[in-house]
Every structure is written in structure tokens, then in C-alpha cells.
Length: 447
Image: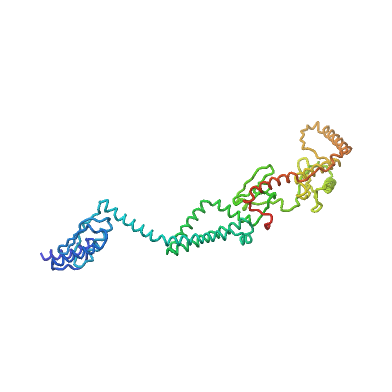
């Protein structure tokens, strides 16, 4: 019997550990006082009476055991009851039988009260918010006024596009300053870091979404500063050749020699190899002529060079040049080059006229320019064909030497850049229509 009582005594702490953590801990008095129970009940009622949401909770205390019955608005208040009741001195255990109410009116009343309280706060906050809004508007208007001034932005920026970027940055700075002042007036300056952080995250997401657009915009800034080409310049970008119409904030517009518009994204232009044919006024043309293998090439080079030097549109410095370039199956090629002034002569017309006149001069001197010929001969006919070919060759040489070149063929044709002038007029007309969007200026410094 004594052993059984000892085991029960040892197991009592383990039973206590199984109770909820919200139950009161400590020694239990051996005295049972009705006065003390009444005092505990009164004290708990007073506490719950001061708290919101416990109006329907009843408290009964017997031998230090507190029984709670009734309803509350939510489970959070039910959980708080154990903690509050357990702190009252003399409480031995807590029986929490409180449940959540299902009364619609009681559940909506707190929400209505909270809405009324917040509306009252908003109404009381309107004067201060009005002052903050007025300060924000005044600062923003000041920023826009300063940004609209022509100076010093036009003086600081290399072109109108960069000046407009300066103005946009200034407007943004004044807007941020106005926001800081407004939040400081309302006592919510700590909210600024949250707003800026959210704006940074949103800006990063937008930047990834419109990466190509941002890349083109940055390339536009760099191209407008560097100015690698000017209006009406003839340039080549990635295999596309034409005259420059304008440079916008997104693309470079070219007019091809066929009259077509070529729109190239500025990011592509900035990363591509740009060939500007108009930056230097002197430009070289080049062509090749095939001569017979038995030609006196020293004499042929002299004839071609003399004819090039006689052309009125060919510059003497840099001087024209002629050299042997390539050996073919039935011909040996010579290459002829000459330089022109682009604003006086058309490259295409000058090259074509030089080919015509040099070819006539070589033919007049008896220099042969045969076409490629392939003949299959049997051994029996080889000797006869060789004799016929030699006779025909002598006949052609005699005819070429005896023939007179007419005066008309010797006349140098006009090589004025009429086609280029017509294209330049088209470019100038289009630039007048869209002049506001153009980032190119003739007065800007060259790259």
C-alpha cells in the first residue's frame, strides 16, 4: 500500500506536465475559501470589463478553479483569456469554454467602429495633408519652371536631345524633393525608403522587360554626342548604304540610292562598323581591265595612266595609279584607280567614264582585250587551226591600228553629281518635316 502511494506521488508531476502551458503554475493552498473564490471572480470580471470583446463572457470560481463561458468575436481573444486569468493570484486551474460568436451584428459592429474611427482620423488629417500636398505641388512646379528655361541647359548640352535629358533629370529630382518634404510634413519620412525601394524594384523589372528600348535610348545619347555622321552623309552600316536623313531617339534613318527608307536601331548602329564615305571630300574609284597575255604590259600601263591623268575630273594629288593585278585563264588584269572631289563629281559617273575612255585608248593603241575562249582540237587539225588563229590575230591587230577613233568617243562626258544632288534635296525636304525629332546638327563637334 505504501509502495502504491509512493508511485502515485511520483507520477503527479508528469500529470501536471501534460496540462496546457496556459494553466497557472505554483503551489495549491490546502484551504478552501469561498471569500477568496468570490474575490478572484470579481477581479477577473473587472479585468474583462475593461477589455473590448469580452462583454458576453461569464466567470465562475469554485475552489480556485475558474470556469469561463460565453462568446467572443475571434479565436485570438479566446486564447488571451487563459493568459489573463492565470495571472490572477489564487487561480488553481482554468476551464475555458468560451466560443466564437456567430451573431452577424456583433461581428460587423467592430468593423463599423474601426471604419468610423479611421474616417475620423482621415478628416482630422486633411489639413496637414493639404499643406503637404501644397508643398509638393509648389516644389514640382518650381522644378518644371527651371527645366523649361533655355539656359543653362542648351549651353551645357552638346545638342537639344542631351539638353532635354538634363531637363527630365531635373524634373525628377524636384519631384523626389517634393515627395520628401511632403512626407516629412506628415511625419512619414520613414515611408520614403519603402517607396524608393519599391520604385527601384519596379524600375529594375521594367528595365529587363524593355531592355532593347533602353539600349537604343542609351545608344542614341552616345551617337548624338559623338556625331559619327551628319545629315546627307553617305554611309554604310552593316551592309546597308545610303544617305543619312536623321537620327532619332530610337533609330537612324537612311535613304538608299534606290529611294527606299532604311531604319536601323541605334543599338545596332552603335555596335556596327560605320563607313562614312562623305567625311573626306576626296574619294577613289577603281576598276579592272583584262588584256591578252601577249600584250606589252609596260606600254599598256603607260597608256592607261596617261589617259587617266588627262581626265578633267581626276585629281593629280592623290595621283592616279595603274598596276598588274591578276592572271586569269586567258587574260591578265590591270587595275586602274583615280581620285575625284565628291562635291564636284559623281563617283559612279566618273568611274564609268574613266572605264570607257581608258578602254578606247587601249584599243586605239592596238592592245587586245580578248574574251575567254575554249577550243577542243584533234592532233590532225592543231597545225591548221594554229595558222588560222595567227592570221586572224594579225588581221584584228591591223584593223585596230588602222581604225580611227571618232571625235565623239574622245569627248569626256559630264560627271556632275546630279543624282547625289537630287537625293540630297529629298533628304533636306524630309528633314524639314521632322526637324524637331532629329538629333544631328551640322554645328555639333565631329567625332
